Length: 437
Image (cartoon, rainbow, N blue to C red; front, top):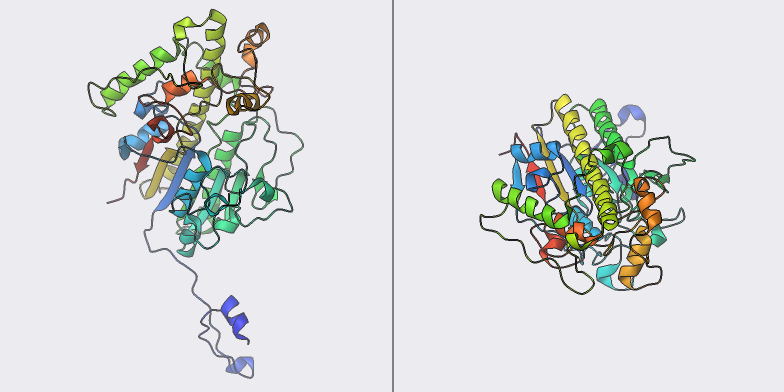
């Protein structure tokens, strides 16, 4: 037998190959096995979630599952990420500085410089690769955003796709964002899911959650002792702001008081919870050019009505993220494995101001306006938008909230995602491991 075949199939072959089978001694390499009692690991990563957006960080949005994790574990008040998407994900999955991981910016293109390749380095192991090599089942669900657009076609290079970077299973979308009611393309493993039409009432976050739960149960059915690593990277609460109508309805009227009042209320709860010290005061409303926020009371009645609707949809999305945490937690409890699971919840960066000053029913137009490219969304609030307000958050719109809400979501910090002020990189971080040291 050639050394090449030995190294590929039976590294360090310790048997003996005789002239016939009866004089040969078989041998099988030992498969990687995690030490007995190794904990499961679950990381739930929200997208564009502000520092104060969950209940245990001062939010009015009901997030009982995340709050329960915090009560049973640790809630960090001074946790930092990078202020944008792909770099945080690359750092999390490699343990490297984002530039060393080739992800100094979002994975939208390769400009020809080493720190900005837009894909994970092949000469550095990922967290999933390390855990699989040590006997873990490795599962990924949701947003990836760690490969360039050139890699996304069926003929593209898959070297920075989830399965090629150590995950046994993957279900989700590879791009930065997608439609939550009708995702334009989902992937299962290395293959696009062929879907002509989504069922009525389909909602991506719930679909991803169902798949995460199914993966966990499949692993446990196949091997009752094998620990697993689940990386659940939400598309929520990144634009487009989409949610089921019934979820949005639960928040109707909650934000009629506006963003100035909201951040005062959130700060008061943060002080009460011990997130920030007594006597903490809010910084002035953001006033930087093109980042400024109008006083809520200066808006017209129609402007306030539409802007409150944007935040109602956002709150419904936050609730959907909490539902996912509850579903995974309930599954672990049902399996008797909750206590020996390291469960982490956090966000990739702070809340986003990409909806501009007025918010928008069309996210890409708003981004064009902010970046100075053609296609800005023009007049902020018109009669047609007011008349169709109930459509905001549904499948016919691609909305994003105005930056006044992002300011409130990042309470008590200043500014937003993409910025080096703390509003860009201070995020919630909750860790629970009941059976841990």
